[in-house]
Amino acid sequence: MKRIITLFTFLAFTCSLQAQSSVTVSVGNGYSTQVYYTMANDAVTTLANNAWDLAFTTGPTDGGVFTNEAANSGSNPVQLWLAPTWEWSDIINPAMLEDSLYNPETDWETGAFNSVKDPLDPSDFGWGFYSEIDNEAIGVRVYALQLRDGSWKKIMIDSLIAGVYYWRYADLDGANETNMTIDKADFAGSPLVYFSFDTEASVASPSGWDLLFTRYLAPLELSGEIVPYPSTGVLSGFGVEVAEAQGVNPATVNYEDYLDSLDTHLDVIGQDWKEFNLTTFSWVLDPNRAYFVKLADNNLWKVVFTAFGGSGTGNITFEKTFVATITGVEEAGSNFTNFGVFPNPAVDELTVAFSLVKSQEVMPLTLVNSLGQEVWRMQVSGTSGLNVWQIDLPGLSNGLYYLIAGNGNEVVSTPVHIQN
Image 1: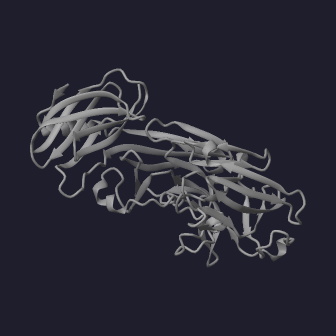
Image 2: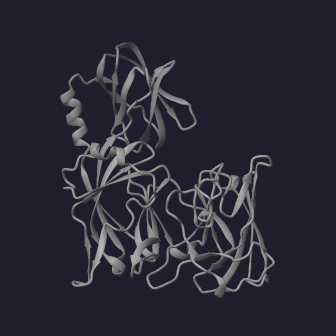
Image 3: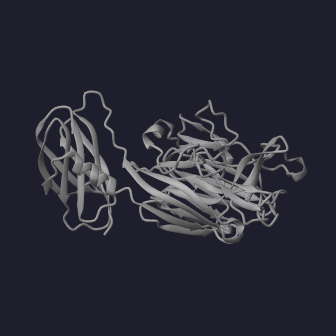
């Protein structure tokens, strides 16, 4: 390991990371698929729109239930209505149903089934209510669901007890009732469980992705009314924050001006980076717009959309640029004022940068794997101000690690991805 003395060297190294690359993701002809995209390595997982109908969240305190709003161009997605009764035995008449429900696209805990909840009542899951006394959620609302083929089901989430969803569905007159269970523990490591009425199977959703390229119901103004309209766009993933910069030069816009605007809403990117020109009958992209995407590992990327192929190809092209690792240390009284690593993902070398309020003669640096097992350790000395060290990594398997600096009460850490 060798120490890099000058700030100039550090800045030159950092600037070299800001290489720009062009990426094309395709949701298929007729918008037939949904694509789960990972920023660091451009990995994609592609699912057909009809691969699933409902999604159940797996977080320990979550009770989110989503409908799959992705549908091919000209086709209908799965649609949900609140039934005009709370009695499961009642026959539901589709003519009595009012406004349909859709996923709010606010977070990955609130789906269409939760959209009717009282936002001021933390015990209200929408489909039911949580009891702290019994430590379980009991369903109270009945829903009507229209599938892509036009057939109908009524559905009720009966309860969520000890991590297990108990739910049922039937024809609108109660015939062909089917009782189902989904145990969150069976899908550990997957953020959602997908259910298909065609296969009657529950499967793990893709995991580890950052952006979802898909069709969804976006609120658009049509004839003076706000209505959910099928749109092709981009939703952010778990732990991802996004800031939108409008009216800017994407090549020179400063990310620091937008750090306070980072938002966890899923549709900050959404679908309005493009519009359809009825005169030229073609899609037009906003040339003065950029997005800053902060991932769960604190890496910040700039995304600028450059082309959209529409339903003919489903191709979405964008330029991505790694900007920075946002790991400012804000705890009052901490000796650290900044801590970061570059590049990330790393291969066999890693540059560590940290700033100290006061000098620290012995500064342990430790790398641990995702199980908390130490795989590398080194001691350095830290001076007041900026410190930059270049580390020669031992041969490590691909995966997620954590670099820890300091000891005792003066400890900071950051994720490190190894990708050989």
